[in-house]
Image (tube, rainbow, N blue to C red; front, side):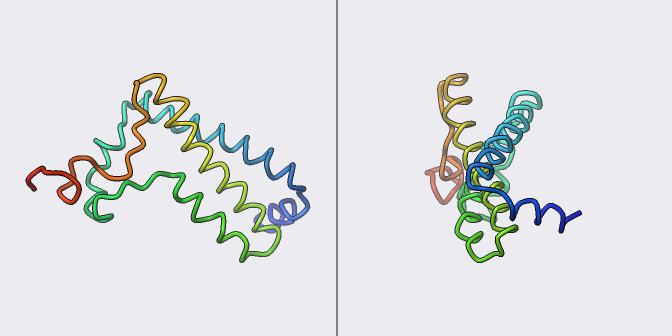
Amino acid sequence: MYKKIIRHCAALSTRHVIAYALILTIFFEAITIGIRFGLNFESTRDTAVVGHFTCGLRVHHGYIGLFLLPLAWCAPLGLRHALWILAIGLVLSDLMHHFFVLWPITGDPQFDFVYPNHPYWSNAKP
């Protein structure tokens, strides 16, 4: 099945790669909205323990996409297109979530680069 998907991705035009990426963006965003509002999950509050491993830096799913974009250039064509689809979907979903969903609904985009209450980045006592 993996080889079939890679062969399919290798045959995609740029327009098709972008179309698949937009579909994946909507899928990722639906999951993100479900977790955020359906499960009442707030990443700053509920993943603060991750800050101990990242020195207080927040890791958005869009960062993973930004990491995958240049990495895809090192892969064969089929895998490259698959990574581009995934990367574009992650980046656009993250941007959409913060600036087109959270900002209008909560009044704050909550696009923090660091955990606000982490000892490295605040005056809070550990």
